[in-house]
Length: 636
Image (cartoon, rainbow, N blue to C red; front, side, top):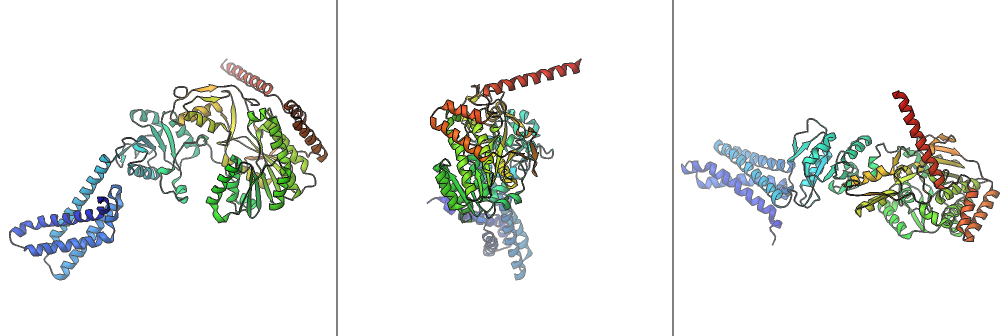
């Protein structure tokens, strides 16, 4: 039978032997001089041992795993010994025993306590050296931070012999900590000297464990770490993890995401406004299984709707979302899931008749630019006619608001996807007349981590060992995280009045080349050395520079500083019917050339990407030349 089952009894027996041995040898000279009798000595030591054991057992000292012991376990051991000795002394005084017994027993108890502590320390050292806690086979890690969260993570990593990380050092900015040690691990610093500190260590992994950092400082530290050739990780907020019921800190050490490098505060919203907008209403989300649609569903579910109706044609993705929502909210969420295509007017009519949604968020669309260039008829059917079918049903059954998820690519479009999304916005303008439903569109740019975005592609390419492919090193894009984009969509929806197009401020632009380089560094590799970056040329329909949506003179700011609104002129219903019919005829013809011609006719701002890119390059070159001339003039 395995000895581990009797570990507590073995430790108890060892403690009894220590107490008896220490006290016996202290009284041995008196016993040899015949000043005391052997029977009395045995009875006194036995009574002292019994008193100590009563308290140690009541304090559950022998139920602790001493290889994980911290200050609390040693304090409990000390308290048990002190209380046991105290009981022994009080009993002897009450019985009128000689003070010699009490004084000698105090010394014997103290010696026994020291022996117990010594043996326990030896056991911990044995576990550290022999069972693998020395770090063999594990990645040597530097923990950035030496505060409460970092120390808690350090203790957890040290106590787990089978864990992934072996702590090598801590790095902190506090002058009073630099040069000291915590649990035997040295503290180095400051953090800004990371590039000179780590080359002298075996560190291959870095964990950022300072949850209180400002976004700007976090971005600075992560950019610094990205040049160390170490793999980077970040400790999620410990308080947030405790609220989610995740007690292990090590389990919440995640890979650094590119959004951690944005270096700005997350967008702040009026949660009470969004909650009152959604609470108690039946809300339908089309395309609910997509990146934006799924996050819309998650955030709407947290606002206590009367019912959430999720509509999508992708049954596997919907199934995963359904499980996620039920796991989070259980019976507190009245959820309906419908497998349906927005292309089918009759089906959408049935769903609206059945659920009578008050709020509709239309996220269903084909959004992949190059694929839609190859399949324009699918973009027209799914985007334009799918929007028409859903919006018409919303109007017919009296929905309060219909919010279209649009895109920055609808502005002066150069591709089929952007052109069809522009027409989706026009569909709403054509359905406004005589409608109780308020139609609005929300337009924003690229979303970090969404399906089809460059981030998942880059991560896969890095996992394969490269190369990472970019279309053109000059490309810049505006990015926002999925939760931020969805929060702004919900708040814009609460503002919405019929016919408005809401534009989200996406912040500062990001160079795709820098994005690729940072992702490679964040993965612990060196760009162009470990992982190549290859330029493969612009894809069909792709722009070099997306236009900054908030530069338009037609925009006005809303109550939220990140949300702007553009008033749009209505489209006459007869005109809407006419161009929808002509577009339908073009699709039915099976001629992609005719579809392109029809889209160019309906959207005068639809231009060829080569024309737009050449103009953008000339503008950039002229701007650079002007800057050089101005600089030369200043020098003269």
